[in-house]
Image 1: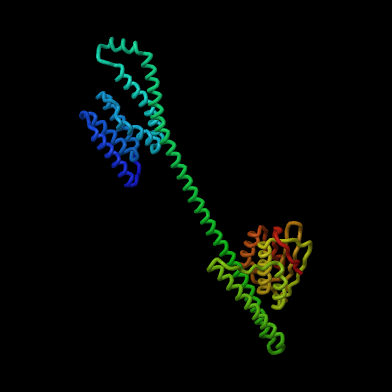
Image 2: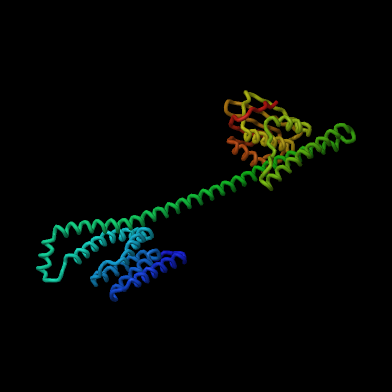
Length: 398
């Protein structure tokens, strides 16, 4: 029944109602009844936004008093228009329909009241009826015109309130939609940031795991060759130095991107696989490659996924593979996909442990492909299928 308004709205309505009452009083009151009517209409206006139902009740009560005292219409009755506006603009559904009915009934009551004041005079009932019959055409004409005029005025006020309500609701829906778009955009940004951090974490894992595996293998080789083959030991140490520098540079780039969300992370592509193979061969892993089919372009995202999966697979082969350490990398190009396998003989250690397999599977899925990692006898095979997304030319891996 009562709406929640801001304090200044209540003050404005109260001040306007008081001002209207005082102005009407300045024009003069002809008796106490008109004072009651004007006061009732002032209250009607004062509460029209706070409680449209109370405004409706006060308005009708005041009109009944006005009719009972046979008072002429007063400009204070304009508050009725404000009340009708409020019932449709601020009221609930039942009150809106009551307001519309009040507009129609009010037009009829106002018409009858005006006709009664104009054509009903004092006298007996017979005289009054005779007078009305003699003026019936004129009464019907004036009554019809008056009813139509009042109905248009009252219903128009009610309709304006309904239009105002529609406008407010439309603005509210627009504001809600805008907030939803902003929230969705913010959520999307947070998801993108989280995805980017996950990607950086995967890159960090791949870079560090691969580089440390190479460094350990080269360090072990250099330690054994130090006395018998200084030249080989020197090459191993040079490889360690180069690998460590490259890893440090990659890690710095990744950390910079993680901290500041800017800068470019390493973007290895298929053309970089040959350097990766050479590096692993120098670390003691015999990498053999087989390629069939006609190579075709892959998107940058697909190429990065292929490189990282091959890198992680061969790093695991270097760390966990049985001696002699060797791995077979097979590339098979079809019309729409690249399927590649990395196979190596593993030790008793579970080659699928840790987060490496999960990271490779996630990379393959994000690239739109499939991934499997399973033992076949004493050979552990990682199979990945990447769909083609032609965007740029690639270098055939040899």
